[in-house]
Amino acid sequence: MLIDRRSFMQTMGAAAVAGAAMPMAQAQGNTIRIYVGFPPGGLPDLVARAVAEQFKRSFGVSALVDNKPGANGRIAGQAVKNAAADGSSFLVAPASGMVHLPHVYKDLGFDPLTDFVPIAQLVENDFALAIYPKVPAQNLKEFAAWCQAHPDQATFGSPGTGSSPHLMGLQIAKALGVRITHVPYRGSNLALGDLLGGHVSSMISSTSFVLQPHRTGQVRILATTGRARSATLPQVPTFEELGMKQLTLTEGTWLLAPARMAPELVEKFSKAALESIKSKEMQVVLDGQTVEAPVGASALAGQMREEYAERGAQIKAFGFSAAL
Image (cartoon, rainbow, N blue to C red; front, side, top):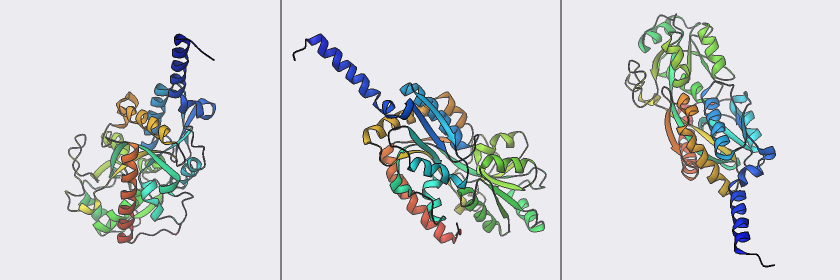
């Protein structure tokens, strides 16, 4: 059947629009669900909400964050592993969930290197040792002395057993030559609540998460794991400055999708996710130690494999093990 030039151009224009909207048409009910394995309020949750808003702007669809706390992020990871790879389901997780936990859990319920496709790294953070302000310690040396004198009160909270903050707390205790009992929680919010109430004497967390409580005097940050002091915390030293270079650590927050996602969808979503760094929602996330660290899909795939191998070697050298 013959058609005229105008009809042909109209048909091609409609096809182009349909192609641009293809990822969203494939999402069930035109809704994107971004899973987070931790309660609302923590760094992964805030990043996920910024990405969700950007997806709404970029694709004109509904996008929501589904918090599935528990099991150190494994529940959310399993949900995305088993989801359709059509652009309807994503996972926002700290890098440790993909490169650290496989070396400390016997069965995660997923294989990070084969069950997910990296979409983007958006931000990077370091960690902080924050203490209850009524603990009479103004610096790391005084905190070590207090722990030595009060072994029954020396505790540290973390977002969960096997997490990066958990391992970091064990390394801090080893470096200080003291015993500090680990208290695991189902997310940073719960750990912070107990720190504010004095139920634990210290906490290991992303620095950005405890920055505001530090500013208001509700907690006291003694040291951070960054490579250099933060401009927002110029008075707080790094562990490296204090002679503990082995405690230098930064961690990315990653956006991932089910491994079966088509390459063209990966690129579309990666581009949109990286645009979220400029958003007003992400500016809230970037207050404090959290910094922009944009990495696209293909580069992140290589980075993920490298960090997986590096973290495995570190954990083996430290001798950490978990019967989980």
